Length: 207
Image (cartoon, one colour):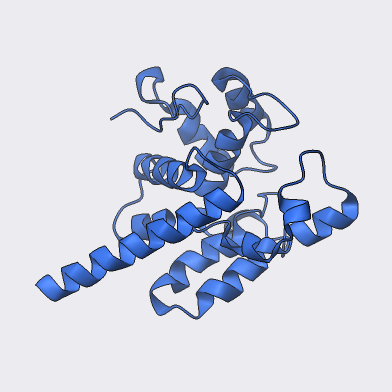
């Protein structure tokens, strides 16, 4: 048992190092991947989700952008908006991430979240245009938290939104970008326990 625990600890440290390297390449000094991973797990618990799926969501969320390894710096780090041709390249990263992780047995369940985290509930997302429950639950949960984090974080081309404005944006996108059931649960979270991923606090759910 001790050997298994040591192996698990070594694997988690390797995972953390990989995620830190990915965030550093994208100049995410505030640990975006770990932040959204924690937020996704806490929202999942409130749905409620438990057992092995929580760990799948955690790993999938941490590694969601691993496919950006295959995106050129000129696109990934561009300070302004991307051109349509550049978006074509950027939209390849979920599939690239899936290819990278699919060969690692322990990450096979998590790589489905990596592949589908940019799918939209109404079928307008990418890479496959999946719709509704065709999208894994973990990806439907994660995509909301990821969007919240993106909206409440400063970008080179725009300032962060307030939490309340981001919350309204999520409500407006229920049924289109986001699963309405996941949005409904998110909106029910009391003020004292909300996901608060603003640049000032850099926190997830309150304990």
